[in-house]
Image (cartoon, rainbow, N blue to C red):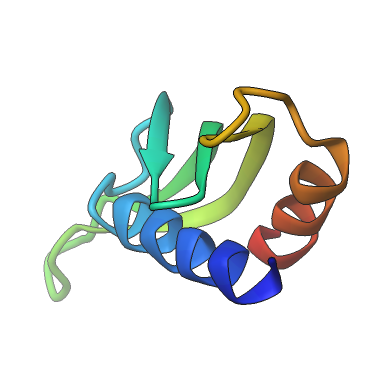
Length: 89
C-alpha cells in the first residue's frame, strides 16, 4: 500500500510543480488510488527596481487531500488521505 501511495504522491508533486502557484483543485490517479487535492499558494513578489528585474516566488503553499479512494472498491480511505497529507506538506 505504501509504495503505491508514494507513487501517487510523486504524481501529485509533479502536478503541483507545474501549477506555478495557481490555486486549484485537481484529481490524480494511479493503478490503485484516486485522490482529489486542493492546492493553495501565496505568491511573493519583488517588483524590482532600476538595477533588478521583477521576480516572483511561492511564499507559502498547502496541499489539502479532499479524499483518497481505492480504485478497486471505490471506498474512501481516511488512512491513505492522512498519509498523503503528511508527506505532501
